[in-house]
Amino acid sequence: MSDKDLLIPASQTDSSAINAQTRRGRIQMLFLLLACAAPVIASYFAYYVIKPEGGKTNFGTLVYPAQAANSGWFDVPLQGKWTLLIARPAGECHVEDKKCIEALFLMRQAKVAVGREGSRVQLLWVNTDGKPVDPAVAQAYDEKVAGFKVVGLPVNPKARAEFMTWLNKEGAGDQIQLIDPSPDKMMLIPVTNSPKEFTAIKKDLEKLLRLNHKGENL
Image (cartoon, helix red, strand yellow):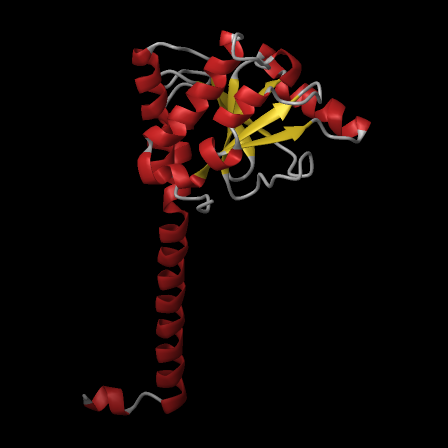
């Protein structure tokens, strides 16, 4: 310590040390917050900044801005989970109805195809007519075998109208709708039976799950 240092009042020395510690603490807190937010920022940057607005990924179509879903619509929780949602009337969804069965099959296979990350994805079928699900379809696509949860439309008329408006925005009511853990609808996936297009859907889903680590295991 120099002679000049010896002439600095003790109170001034303590104050400088405290200020330096405070600055270091704030910087460390900032880095911690950035580290926690990085996966979310990365996923949305990749999809909403690098990609053009309203553009396409490998196959699915981005919803921009994302459309908020109401967690109170169904008994099945949407908050904190990745959800692939389809809306179909059970009364018309039979084994012979290829359009409906292909949608259910596509969702089931997409969940399986992403491997262990599939545990973060739930499959939700909104039964729009409230009729019983065909026994053969129920056996192949029930919750235990395929992971599907079947729910009816919201009972409350206002909530039902709100959901139907949300579902059919941009004429997308027949498509598979991807909801993130926020929960926001962020991607529309057309139903397809093309192996090439299925591979593209798998890549879209894998990229989202890799970039955004939000969403608990089911």
